[in-house]
Structure formats: C-alpha cells, structure tokens
Image (cartoon, rainbow, N blue to C red; front, side):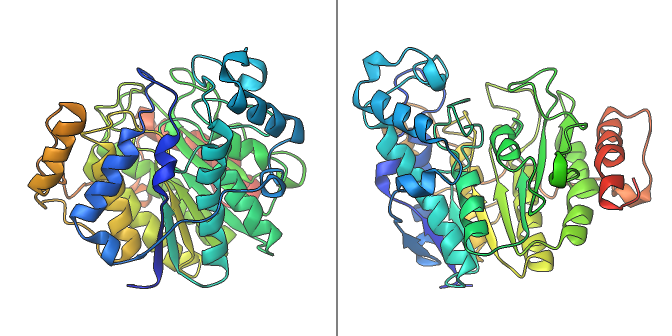
Length: 390
C-alpha cells in the first residue's frame, strides 16, 4: 500500500481555532499529526498539502451569500452577530476563519480528486469531517462542510454513486441535507438518538425525498450504547446497503466523540471499537468500492486521551500499516503532550477491550433490546425503499 495512500495535511489547519475554552481545541489536530509521526506512519504514505477550496468549489454546496458572510466575519469577527450561524456560542467568529475553513475543505476536495483519478487508492484528512455546516449557514463547530464538498466534487468529476458513512456521535445532518434529493449519494449515519443530543435530527424516518427517497439512512442509538451494540448496529446496516448500492467511492467520517470519555455526548464506545469500525470501513471500501476510500475526521473533544489515538489508528489503516492495539506510545510524544497541555498522555493504543466481540445480526435479534429496536426501526424505514428485506 506504500505510495498508494495519501495523508492530506497542512500545518495551517491548526488555525481553525474558536478561542480559549471552546471544546474544539486545535491541539487535537497537532497532537494527532505528531503521534502519526511518532509511529513513523508518515513514511508509509504520501503527505500532501492541497490548496484551499476556491469560491467556485465552495459554491458546489454553499450559497454565495453565506460564503460572503463568512468572509465578512473573517475580516471583522467583532461584527458577527449570529447571522448565518456566525458569532454564536457554537461558532464564534475569528480572524482568518474563511481562509482556514477553505483550507480544511481543500484537503478533503483534494483527497477526492486524488482518489477519483487513481493517483492513490485511499486518502485521509483527519482535520476534516465538519459535517454540520449547511448550504446557507454554520452549525455545530462547522463553517464549511468539507465532506459534502468532497462528494460534490466527485459528482462533478463524473461519479455516479458515492456512499457516505458517518460514525460520529452526532447526526451527519449537513451532508444529508446537501444530498437529500440526490439518488447518486447514499448517506448513512450512526449516531446518538436525537432525543438526547444535538442536532436533534437523524430519525430513522428521515429517508430522503423525491428521486433521493431511500438514499438517506439513519441509525439512532440509545444513550449508553457500548462497544458490542455499536459495532453490531454498524454491521447490521452498513454492509448490506453498500452491497446493494455498489458505490464507486466510499467516503467515511470518523468522529471520535462516540468514546466513553467524550464530554459532549453519551455513548460508551471504546477506542478499540472505533478501530474495529475503521478496519471494517477499509474492508468495505475494497469489497464494494474498488478500494477507493476517503476517510475524514470529525468531532472528538477528549483531545489528549482519545482523539490522537483514534485518528492515528485511522491513518495507519489507510496507510496499510495498522498500529497494533497493544502498541506502546512513544515516550517523546507523551512528553510533548505534557509540555503542551499539562496532561498525562495515554501509554498504549488501546482501552484494553481488543478484540471487540459482537453478535451478528443474521444470527437473530432481540425485539426487547433497545439497540436492536433502533436497528429494526432503520431497516424497516429504508430497506424496503431500496428493494431490500427489512
């Protein structure tokens, strides 16, 4: 796989900074990049800095008036008063906001171009996955929706079937909205139930509209879902849909905020289960998408203990050199963590739960189990629309 995978990285993406005390601390990106280097993974793939997304690219998804509003707020952050979602508690305006948001988007668009043209089989942008931004507004720490822009660029280049799988703890609402009526894009989101978490969307009954009816899939999992249930739900829904859809490219979003230590959500997933799903996405890309895989980051607010380890595993899998769960984390990285954050870094690349066991859906389900109820609700809502048995 060496030479057939790319890491999209420009150090300037760490300028995506909403300010002190905001949950999305850019140190998570810097620490991830350093951990990737500490394990030597940057020698196993090509590190590429793509150019920022230009206005014509941004307009593939975002409205012109919104892009203009971002530029204005970027130049004068103090003037942002909440219009277009800018200058809010979630999305405070900051100097250079447009430029760094366009840079992050450019890395995901560059990944899409690279994979589609066959210059690499896989590409990863862990700074991306900003899946809440809407065509006409910022939302949920997201200014420009790089995931949607990458997909839109694939369609522009001629792709006819793109699958998007989102395993962030929050619903991938912005990507779903961008392709709500487009049958060329299958969006699948596994997330905490909207009753208990932002953005309060992602119900099983949200299945797309018009020509896109049946192209939006939502698995809304109960708070407290742990490893076995989370991985079971993934395998009970995703592979069968990908087998039916046969995407030409698979785009996946790997928010690390499903973790039991994450301060903003209520699932109880371990690093080991996150790694298991990353491995599954890699395998599914090869099985159903000809190996064309674009992997993105996303949420994740346990910025020292969880995010760097989770996304370093992702980079290793993309590179074809997966990091063993039992691997000891290099001491130099842990010293850097303490110097930067005054926190003690983790010692191993596992939470001690590897391998992750789960029950296969085909072996039977329990109608009284809350996770199985969630899976059944999704399958009953969308599978018949695609000609599949629920």
